[in-house]
Length: 239
Ligand code: UDP
Image (tube, rainbow, N blue to C red; front, top):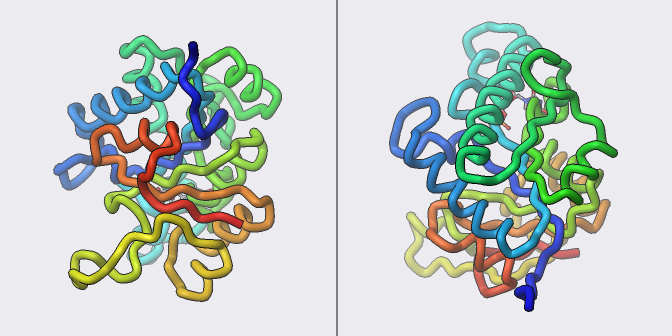
C-alpha cells in the first residue's frame, strides 16, 4: 500500500545558498547531489513537488544596489542567477532519474520554457518535478515571494522553506542556549514576535491565502522526508 503522507502537493523553496555547501560562491557539486537525493526520496512517496530556487549564491539585487547599480537592473541580474541554479538543479534531477522541467518567469525561450500555469499543473499531475526560475519576474521582489505566489497558484498544501536551522526558535539558538524550537506557531503570533520567517510580502501572501509554511533544515539528512511524512520536524506556521 502507498505510504500515507502529510502533504500531497508541495512547493519547496530552496535558497541559492543551499547549493553552495561550504564554498564561498556558486554551486557545490556534492551539495546539489545530496539535495536532489533528498528530493528524489520524497517524490518516491508519491507527493507532487515544485521547487522555487533562489539566486543568492550567485547574485543578489541588494548587492548590486549597494555598489551604485540601478536596483531594478541588479534585480534582473539576480533573477537570471536563479535561472542558472534552476538549470543546474534540473540537470542533476534528470541525471538522478527524476523528470524535471524548468519554467521561467522571464522569457528566455532558447534556454527554458516560459511559466504557463496550466502546463505546470499538467507536469505535476504527470509526476514531474517543476523548477520555477526567475522568481516572480519582477524586480523588488524575492524568491520567497515567488514561492508564496507559485505555491498559491498551483494549489500547494504547504510551502516548505528550507533553511540552515531546523525550524523557528524562540531566540537565536547560536547565541542563546535556552532557545527552543516552535513545533507550531500561528501567522499572527509569528508576526507579533517578529520572527522573520519569510520576507513581509511572502509572509502576507501565505497568510492571506491560508497557505501554511513549514520551516525545516535542508542540511539535516532525512528531514525533508520526515516533513512530508508529517513527523515532528521543523516548525509549522499555520493560520
Ligand atoms: N529577484 C527579483 N525578483 C524576484 C525574485 C528574485 O528581483 O521575484 C532577484 C533579487 O535581486 C534577489 C535575487 O533575484 O536578490 C536572488 O533571489 P533571492 O535573494 O530571493 O535568492 P535566495 O536568497 O533565496 O538565494
